[in-house]
Every structure is written in C-alpha cells, then in structure tokens.
Length: 97
Image (tube, rainbow, N blue to C red):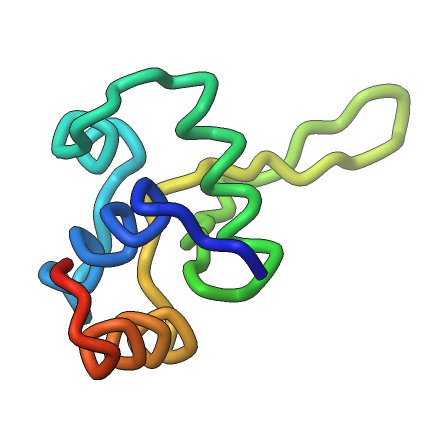
C-alpha cells in the first residue's frame, strides 16, 4: 500500500469528523486539491484497502420487466479503524499530518 500526502489529507479530515461521516462533496471542498477525477480515484483506492468506507442508504427498488433492481444512494464517507491506525502510525513516525 503506497499512500500519498493526498491520501493522508483525506484520512485526516475524516478522522477529525470521527465518528461522524462526511458527504463526498463536503470532503472534496475541504481538500487542498479539488480535482474531482483524482478524488474519486483515490477514494476507491482507500476503500480497496479498507481505510474508509462508504455509507450507503437503500432508497427502494425499481422494477423493469418483472426484474427488481435496488436503488442505492451513497450518503457519506467514514474513516475505518484501520484508517485511524494508519494515521496513528504516521504520527508515531514523527511526520506532520
């Protein structure tokens, strides 16, 4: 796992809001680099390593030709315990967050 300063910035912001969560737009607005394409890619990377999680709300189901599809709405992002541990490890190394 190769985390950049951008990843640490995302985790640090979410950690300050812990145990609350932030909507993606709110988190993007707080970042120094507001490039939405990069943001989405890096969020997927952090989710892959289970450092943050997306809270999803089920809004119901859509039925098309007798096949039901769930309608999912992404509400927010939240740092996981693993993400908090990564931040603590970096702080122990003496690096500024």
